[in-house]
Image 1: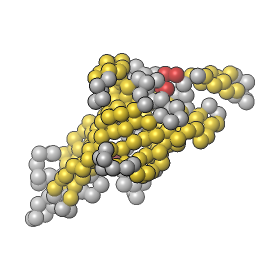
Image 2: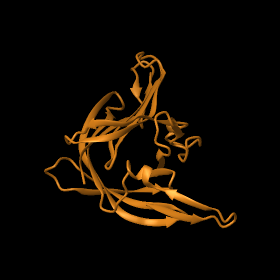
Image 3: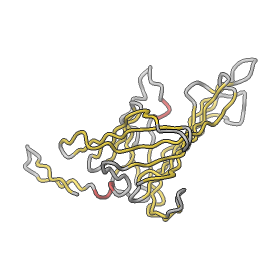
Image 4: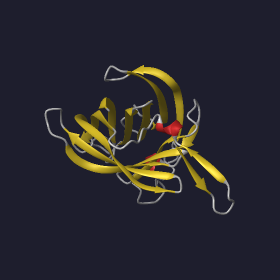
Length: 236
């Protein structure tokens, strides 16, 4: 699909080609993907971790805005503990297709998930729209992340036993400080996503951990540390 936009000042015609990004992030109304979500949280004042599992579904509720070649869609998020329970509406998200990027807004944070061209080694600042530098920011660890395409076009067997052409986006892999030393401050940030052609995101792993050594009574993991793993189990 192509949309032709006229630039008022230069009278230049620009063709917005959506096909390249659409193939890995379909935005048709009614499109859904269901995931197994494993959520890692820290309890007992950051001294112990535990994993809680859910099922999460994202459904494209339709186009809500179209302006200057940019299209915005609303995605509804539903959650349940397991397949024996009914879906419960949890939140609404947005996906913005600009022609050159697909941005995803969730929990007030806007990520540039995909950017043209989709080719091995191409990089961009995926968190450029997220405020990380203010004194009140709770997501300083998201600052200056570089997203990079790898394994473009790799054929993979997905969790639902189908095979699809995929791309991987490495977003962050860093360790700060001495992560194996309980007497030293440390921080770990890791993020990676995979998208399958004709489906959308099929895998996501995110982990942020800030460790404080404490004094006398031992160290603890700071508030705001967590991890999530999304694995696709169904889609239409």
